[in-house]
Image (cartoon, rainbow, N blue to C red; front, side, top):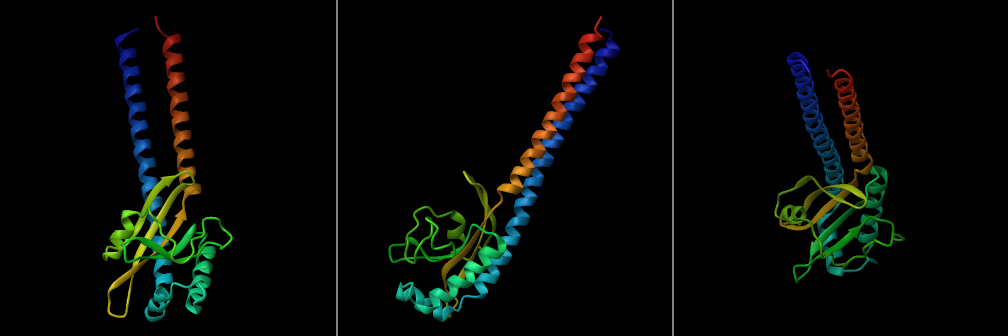
Length: 209
């Protein structure tokens, strides 16, 4: 093979390599932007939900530890409506008991859902973002990947009448469809690049001297 042809093929390989890097970084960045946008949307709904909470009535509900309390039904219906309207996995309020364990006050999932958590249900696995939220560091767009897809969550503290943070309101959005589309785009890019590299290899093989 002539030096000129070798130089041409080397240049093509470098170009393909650069395209792979650029596509990979671009896809990763797209995913981050999509998750950030979803997080902001979730946080907006969390703020709306927080505005529905009346501190005095909420503290009465927590003290009663009863799902028969009138304010439980009122909050549950409002949160369930928000969850349904925004197609969220869940909207919920959690606080800590005397032992420092987090437990549900409101869980907006259907009461027929096997995962529905009644008032007082303790949750052992709590994201760090929730601990940050009750300390005043409200979280926009925390996310983790699980078997159901990518869950994007936002958290906001709830304060009592004295301004003390007593609970955290959170919402989860399943971004599986969004991330699946981005992954599909990535696979298509890889397939196109691979086919291009294969054709270049075939041409190089057929044209060698």
